[in-house]
Each structure stands twice: as structure tokens, then as C-alpha cells.
Image (cartoon, rainbow, N blue to C red; front, side):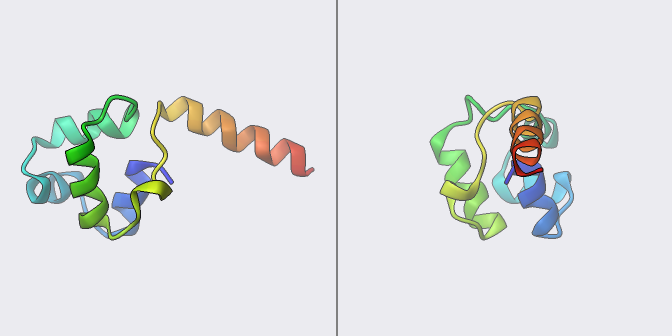
Length: 77
């Protein structure tokens, strides 16, 4: 699951989640688009906020996740 999907599933806006993580909401939005270089401490904090294990959060660029999902769907069909 992407960081954005985890946040949405937690029922939080980007501003609410950023405030809880003590970061600027633009920083959070940046990581939602590309989480490949997110600090481990921030990932840990966000997984606590979103109540999801870190291992369930996709780390990488948003377009890579979309490509992986599309590839998986095409293999099923």
C-alpha cells in the first residue's frame, strides 16, 4: 500500500497527518509521490499514525507502484 493510501485509509488529510508527524504537509505530499528516500524514523512514525506495519507500505515512486499493479493485473487475466 502506498503512503497516500495508508493515510486515506486512516481517515486523515495530508495536513492532519503531517501535523501528527511534526512535518510540513508539503513534505508529506512529496513522500507520497516518492518515498524511496524517506527517513526510517519518519516511516516508523507514519506507520504508527496510520496503524499499519512498515512492511505493508510501498517504498518507491508512485508511478512504479502503478506500473507494478498494472503488470500484476495483466498477468491475472
